[in-house]
Image (cartoon, rainbow, N blue to C red):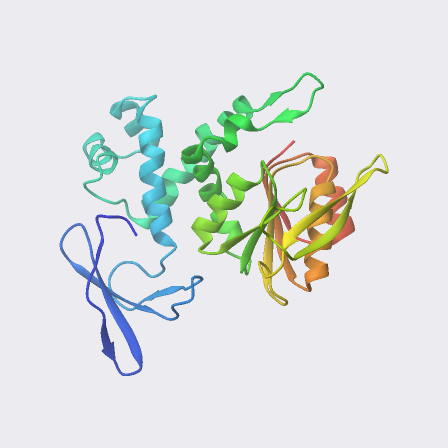
Length: 283
C-alpha cells in the first residue's frame, strides 16, 4: 500500500478481523482481510474503496502523469485529459490521489494517445530480423503501465501462480505477479545449481531439434491455476513447452499473456491449445 496510507491497529468484530487505513486527507477507511494467504483479497466495508485492486489504478495513473509531464506542460495535459492544471499538479506531486473513475480515464487516454505508439517505437529488430523487446522489458515503470493497461482483462482470470521461461519473460512475470498478488514460477533451460529435484519436459522446435526445460519441484502444486506469460510470442514454442509443464504438474492453465504477439503464431496457439490468449499488441 502507498506510504501515504498508514495501516492502523487491527480490531475484532465478531469472527471478522478488521483494519483501518488512514487516507491522505486524514479520514479512516475500514477494511477486512479475508485471508492472510499471500494471495489475499481485501474487502472494503466502508469508505470510498471497494476493492484493493483499485489502488493500482489510482497509483498507476499518477505514474502515468509523471511520465507525460516529462514530455508535456500542465496546459497541454489539461487539454488532453480535460482536467484543470492545478488538479493535475496535485496529482503529479502526490498531494491527492485521483478517483478510480479519473484514474481509469487517465490510463485509457494514455494507452490510446501514447502507450501503443511508444511500445512500437521501442521495438527493434536484430541483424537477422528478429524482434527485440529489450527497451520495453528493461524499463520497469514503462512495463508496469503496459500491465495496468491490460489489468481489467487479466482480472477475469483465476491465478495462483505466474509462470514464465527464462529470461526475457521474467520482468513481465514479476510485474504481473506483483500486481496480481501471486508468486512466480520460472522454468529454466538448464538445471539450477543447488536444486535437487526438478520437473522436466521436452521443448521441441520447428526445426525438429529439442531441449529440456526444468522447474524446481514444489513451485507449482497440483490443481493450482497458472497464468503463462512472456515478452513476445514468436512461434508459440515456448508457450507449448510451458503448457506441457503445467500438464505434467496437473495444474490448470488460466490463460496466456504476452506484451507482443505475432498474429499467425497467436492464432495457431488459440486453435491448438484452446486457451485464452491476451496480448498488449498483436502484429
